[in-house]
Length: 281
View 1 (cartoon, rainbow, N blue to C red):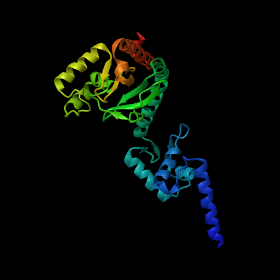
View 2 (view 1 turned 120 degrees about the horizontal axis):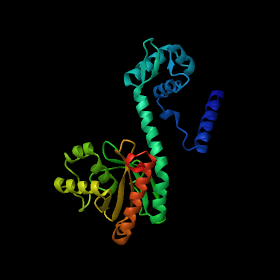
View 3 (view 1 turned 45 degrees about the horizontal axis):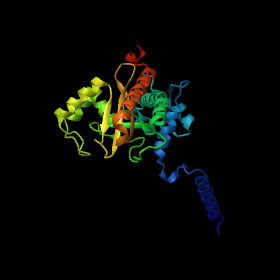
View 4 (view 1 turned 180 degrees about the vertical axis):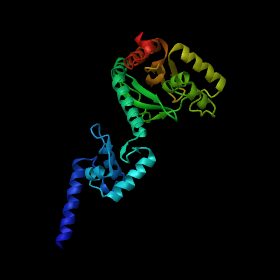
Protein backbone atom coordinates (compact mmCIF):
# COMPACT_ATOMS: atom_id res chain seq x y z
CA UNK A 1 0.00 0.00 0.00
CA UNK A 2 1.42 3.48 -0.86
CA UNK A 3 2.79 5.50 2.06
CA UNK A 4 0.32 8.31 1.33
CA UNK A 5 -2.61 5.93 1.81
CA UNK A 6 -1.11 4.69 5.07
CA UNK A 7 -0.75 8.26 6.31
CA UNK A 8 -4.36 9.04 5.38
CA UNK A 9 -5.60 5.94 7.21
CA UNK A 10 -3.54 6.85 10.29
CA UNK A 11 -5.04 10.35 10.25
CA UNK A 12 -8.56 8.95 9.91
CA UNK A 13 -7.97 6.56 12.81
CA UNK A 14 -6.67 9.43 14.98
CA UNK A 15 -9.75 11.52 14.16
CA UNK A 16 -12.02 8.59 14.99
CA UNK A 17 -10.16 8.00 18.26
CA UNK A 18 -10.64 11.65 19.22
CA UNK A 19 -14.36 11.44 18.48
CA UNK A 20 -14.62 8.21 20.50
CA UNK A 21 -12.91 9.87 23.46
CA UNK A 22 -15.05 13.01 23.15
CA UNK A 23 -18.58 12.38 21.81
CA UNK A 24 -19.07 16.13 21.52
CA UNK A 25 -16.14 16.54 19.14
CA UNK A 26 -17.43 18.11 15.93
CA UNK A 27 -16.87 16.39 12.62
CA UNK A 28 -14.95 18.94 10.47
CA UNK A 29 -17.06 17.90 7.49
CA UNK A 30 -20.09 19.43 9.24
CA UNK A 31 -18.44 22.80 9.82
CA UNK A 32 -18.77 25.82 7.53
CA UNK A 33 -15.33 27.36 7.09
CA UNK A 34 -16.58 30.88 6.39
CA UNK A 35 -18.54 30.86 9.66
CA UNK A 36 -15.50 29.60 11.57
CA UNK A 37 -13.35 32.35 10.06
CA UNK A 38 -15.94 35.00 10.88
CA UNK A 39 -15.95 33.72 14.45
CA UNK A 40 -12.17 34.01 14.57
CA UNK A 41 -12.44 37.64 13.53
CA UNK A 42 -14.98 38.37 16.26
CA UNK A 43 -12.81 36.55 18.82
CA UNK A 44 -9.98 38.97 18.06
CA UNK A 45 -11.86 41.80 19.78
CA UNK A 46 -11.69 42.17 23.56
CA UNK A 47 -11.74 44.92 26.18
CA UNK A 48 -8.06 45.60 25.57
CA UNK A 49 -8.53 45.76 21.80
CA UNK A 50 -12.00 47.20 21.14
CA UNK A 51 -10.97 48.70 17.77
CA UNK A 52 -8.91 46.83 15.17
CA UNK A 53 -7.76 47.56 11.64
CA UNK A 54 -7.63 45.22 8.66
CA UNK A 55 -3.92 44.50 9.08
CA UNK A 56 -4.30 43.73 12.79
CA UNK A 57 -7.20 41.37 12.11
CA UNK A 58 -5.22 39.55 9.43
CA UNK A 59 -2.33 39.12 11.87
CA UNK A 60 -4.63 37.93 14.66
CA UNK A 61 -6.41 35.32 12.54
CA UNK A 62 -3.82 34.33 9.97
CA UNK A 63 -6.28 35.06 7.15
CA UNK A 64 -5.23 36.87 3.99
CA UNK A 65 -6.43 40.42 3.31
CA UNK A 66 -8.89 39.51 0.57
CA UNK A 67 -10.70 36.91 2.69
CA UNK A 68 -10.59 39.11 5.78
CA UNK A 69 -11.98 42.13 3.95
CA UNK A 70 -14.82 40.07 2.47
CA UNK A 71 -15.76 38.59 5.85
CA UNK A 72 -15.55 41.99 7.56
CA UNK A 73 -17.84 43.54 4.94
CA UNK A 74 -20.39 40.78 5.60
CA UNK A 75 -20.18 41.23 9.37
CA UNK A 76 -20.69 44.97 8.98
CA UNK A 77 -23.66 44.37 6.69
CA UNK A 78 -25.17 42.04 9.33
CA UNK A 79 -24.63 44.59 12.09
CA UNK A 80 -22.17 42.47 14.08
CA UNK A 81 -19.37 44.99 13.40
CA UNK A 82 -19.30 48.70 12.56
CA UNK A 83 -16.72 50.96 10.88
CA UNK A 84 -15.06 53.85 12.66
CA UNK A 85 -14.46 57.21 11.03
CA UNK A 86 -10.86 56.11 10.48
CA UNK A 87 -11.90 52.94 8.66
CA UNK A 88 -11.15 50.49 11.47
CA UNK A 89 -13.63 47.99 12.91
CA UNK A 90 -15.37 47.61 16.27
CA UNK A 91 -18.11 45.43 17.74
CA UNK A 92 -21.60 46.58 16.77
CA UNK A 93 -24.61 47.09 19.00
CA UNK A 94 -26.22 43.94 17.62
CA UNK A 95 -23.55 41.82 19.30
CA UNK A 96 -23.85 43.88 22.45
CA UNK A 97 -27.61 43.28 22.54
CA UNK A 98 -27.17 39.56 22.01
CA UNK A 99 -24.58 39.40 24.76
CA UNK A 100 -26.89 41.31 27.08
CA UNK A 101 -29.65 38.77 26.49
CA UNK A 102 -27.27 35.93 27.30
CA UNK A 103 -26.05 37.64 30.46
CA UNK A 104 -29.61 38.38 31.57
CA UNK A 105 -30.63 34.75 31.12
CA UNK A 106 -27.60 33.45 33.00
CA UNK A 107 -28.18 35.90 35.84
CA UNK A 108 -31.87 35.03 36.02
CA UNK A 109 -31.18 31.31 36.13
CA UNK A 110 -28.55 31.76 38.82
CA UNK A 111 -30.84 33.86 40.96
CA UNK A 112 -33.83 31.53 40.52
CA UNK A 113 -32.03 28.22 41.02
CA UNK A 114 -32.26 28.04 44.86
CA UNK A 115 -36.00 28.80 44.78
CA UNK A 116 -36.67 26.20 42.06
CA UNK A 117 -34.73 23.56 43.95
CA UNK A 118 -36.60 24.37 47.15
CA UNK A 119 -40.00 24.00 45.45
CA UNK A 120 -39.05 20.71 43.81
CA UNK A 121 -37.71 19.28 47.06
CA UNK A 122 -40.64 20.47 49.16
CA UNK A 123 -43.42 19.07 46.97
CA UNK A 124 -41.70 16.41 44.87
CA UNK A 125 -43.02 17.86 41.62
CA UNK A 126 -41.20 19.73 38.82
CA UNK A 127 -40.29 23.40 39.18
CA UNK A 128 -39.97 25.53 36.04
CA UNK A 129 -38.47 28.90 35.14
CA UNK A 130 -39.91 30.49 31.98
CA UNK A 131 -39.35 33.75 30.12
CA UNK A 132 -41.47 35.48 27.43
CA UNK A 133 -40.64 34.72 23.81
CA UNK A 134 -42.04 35.76 20.44
CA UNK A 135 -44.01 32.55 19.98
CA UNK A 136 -44.83 31.75 23.59
CA UNK A 137 -43.32 31.14 27.01
CA UNK A 138 -39.83 29.61 26.86
CA UNK A 139 -38.64 27.13 29.50
CA UNK A 140 -35.08 28.12 30.45
CA UNK A 141 -34.66 25.94 33.54
CA UNK A 142 -36.37 23.10 35.40
CA UNK A 143 -35.78 20.86 38.40
CA UNK A 144 -37.53 17.61 39.23
CA UNK A 145 -38.53 16.52 42.72
CA UNK A 146 -38.54 12.97 44.08
CA UNK A 147 -41.77 11.90 42.39
CA UNK A 148 -42.24 14.06 39.29
CA UNK A 149 -44.76 13.41 36.57
CA UNK A 150 -42.80 12.58 33.42
CA UNK A 151 -43.64 15.25 30.82
CA UNK A 152 -40.85 14.57 28.34
CA UNK A 153 -41.76 17.25 25.84
CA UNK A 154 -41.65 20.10 28.38
CA UNK A 155 -37.93 20.52 28.85
CA UNK A 156 -35.46 23.36 28.65
CA UNK A 157 -36.03 25.20 25.39
CA UNK A 158 -39.69 24.17 25.06
CA UNK A 159 -42.03 26.98 23.92
CA UNK A 160 -45.53 26.88 25.40
CA UNK A 161 -48.59 28.78 24.07
CA UNK A 162 -49.53 31.85 26.06
CA UNK A 163 -53.22 30.97 26.51
CA UNK A 164 -52.68 27.64 28.31
CA UNK A 165 -50.61 26.34 31.26
CA UNK A 166 -49.82 28.33 34.40
CA UNK A 167 -46.55 30.04 33.46
CA UNK A 168 -47.66 31.28 30.04
CA UNK A 169 -51.03 32.47 31.35
CA UNK A 170 -49.24 34.47 34.03
CA UNK A 171 -47.20 36.21 31.35
CA UNK A 172 -50.28 36.93 29.26
CA UNK A 173 -51.91 38.55 32.28
CA UNK A 174 -48.97 40.86 33.01
CA UNK A 175 -47.73 41.78 29.52
CA UNK A 176 -50.31 44.02 27.75
CA UNK A 177 -48.54 44.03 24.37
CA UNK A 178 -48.26 40.25 24.30
CA UNK A 179 -51.87 39.93 25.46
CA UNK A 180 -53.20 42.17 22.71
CA UNK A 181 -51.20 40.45 20.00
CA UNK A 182 -51.94 36.90 21.16
CA UNK A 183 -55.67 37.33 21.65
CA UNK A 184 -56.04 38.88 18.20
CA UNK A 185 -55.37 35.45 16.66
CA UNK A 186 -57.49 32.25 16.77
CA UNK A 187 -56.65 30.23 19.89
CA UNK A 188 -55.79 26.55 19.61
CA UNK A 189 -57.55 23.96 21.77
CA UNK A 190 -55.24 21.54 23.59
CA UNK A 191 -57.70 19.80 25.93
CA UNK A 192 -61.40 20.18 26.66
CA UNK A 193 -60.39 22.56 29.47
CA UNK A 194 -58.54 25.01 27.21
CA UNK A 195 -60.27 28.40 27.21
CA UNK A 196 -60.62 29.77 23.68
CA UNK A 197 -63.35 32.37 24.14
CA UNK A 198 -61.70 35.79 24.26
CA UNK A 199 -64.13 37.38 26.74
CA UNK A 200 -63.79 34.47 29.16
CA UNK A 201 -60.02 34.46 28.82
CA UNK A 202 -59.82 38.23 29.35
CA UNK A 203 -61.76 37.82 32.60
CA UNK A 204 -59.42 35.07 33.77
CA UNK A 205 -56.35 37.15 32.95
CA UNK A 206 -57.68 40.12 34.92
CA UNK A 207 -58.24 37.79 37.88
CA UNK A 208 -54.73 36.35 37.57
CA UNK A 209 -53.21 39.82 37.54
CA UNK A 210 -55.19 40.83 40.62
CA UNK A 211 -54.51 37.67 42.64
CA UNK A 212 -50.84 37.34 41.71
CA UNK A 213 -50.81 33.69 40.69
CA UNK A 214 -52.24 31.22 38.15
CA UNK A 215 -53.67 27.74 38.65
CA UNK A 216 -53.67 25.45 35.61
CA UNK A 217 -55.94 22.41 35.77
CA UNK A 218 -55.50 20.22 32.67
CA UNK A 219 -55.91 23.15 30.27
CA UNK A 220 -52.74 22.32 28.33
CA UNK A 221 -52.10 18.63 29.03
CA UNK A 222 -54.59 16.06 30.27
CA UNK A 223 -53.74 14.89 33.77
CA UNK A 224 -51.35 17.77 34.44
CA UNK A 225 -51.84 20.69 36.84
CA UNK A 226 -49.60 23.61 37.76
CA UNK A 227 -49.29 26.83 39.73
CA UNK A 228 -47.25 29.84 38.60
CA UNK A 229 -46.40 33.32 39.87
CA UNK A 230 -44.73 36.30 38.18
CA UNK A 231 -41.12 37.38 38.59
CA UNK A 232 -40.55 41.14 38.23
CA UNK A 233 -37.31 42.92 37.37
CA UNK A 234 -35.77 46.29 38.21
CA UNK A 235 -38.33 48.23 36.16
CA UNK A 236 -41.28 46.46 37.78
CA UNK A 237 -42.22 44.60 34.60
CA UNK A 238 -42.56 40.84 34.33
CA UNK A 239 -39.26 39.16 33.50
CA UNK A 240 -40.15 35.50 34.06
CA UNK A 241 -42.40 33.08 35.90
CA UNK A 242 -41.73 30.46 38.54
CA UNK A 243 -44.06 27.48 38.42
CA UNK A 244 -44.59 24.01 39.84
CA UNK A 245 -46.22 21.30 37.75
CA UNK A 246 -47.21 17.67 38.21
CA UNK A 247 -50.17 15.28 38.37
CA UNK A 248 -53.46 17.23 38.37
CA UNK A 249 -54.51 15.55 41.61
CA UNK A 250 -51.56 17.17 43.39
CA UNK A 251 -52.94 20.60 42.57
CA UNK A 252 -56.33 20.40 44.21
CA UNK A 253 -57.72 20.64 47.73
CA UNK A 254 -55.69 21.68 50.75
CA UNK A 255 -52.37 20.83 49.07
CA UNK A 256 -53.10 23.46 46.42
CA UNK A 257 -53.23 26.18 49.09
CA UNK A 258 -49.74 25.25 50.29
CA UNK A 259 -48.39 25.16 46.74
CA UNK A 260 -49.82 28.58 45.87
CA UNK A 261 -48.22 30.09 48.96
CA UNK A 262 -44.83 28.48 48.26
CA UNK A 263 -44.78 29.38 44.56
CA UNK A 264 -45.71 33.01 45.28
CA UNK A 265 -43.00 33.20 47.93
CA UNK A 266 -40.44 31.70 45.55
CA UNK A 267 -41.34 34.17 42.78
CA UNK A 268 -41.15 37.07 45.25
CA UNK A 269 -37.72 35.93 46.39
CA UNK A 270 -36.42 35.82 42.81
CA UNK A 271 -37.98 39.22 42.11
CA UNK A 272 -36.18 40.68 45.11
CA UNK A 273 -32.90 39.16 43.90
CA UNK A 274 -33.44 40.85 40.52
CA UNK A 275 -33.99 44.22 42.20
CA UNK A 276 -37.76 44.54 41.80
CA UNK A 277 -38.83 47.80 43.46
CA UNK A 278 -42.01 46.25 44.86
CA UNK A 279 -40.21 43.36 46.53
CA UNK A 280 -37.38 45.56 47.80
CA UNK A 281 -39.79 47.91 49.52
